[in-house]
Length: 84
Image (cartoon, rainbow, N blue to C red; front, top):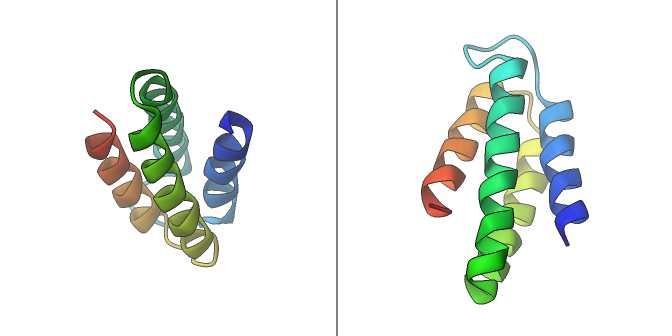
């Protein structure tokens, strides 16, 4: 499950454009932070992890089709809040 999640993070990151206020570097840092928090959530609350990962996978598919790093960073920020 963790590998699927990490693949989703990377595919969203790779599909995003470099021409945004949020840089690729920032998006990558946020992606790694989200990954770390979701992995911690998996250890603490399996049910909530499943809910979060399902939502994340759906949203990742949407974000992979756009070229907006700002939207990606905004979503990562939302995920960081949800997984605290």
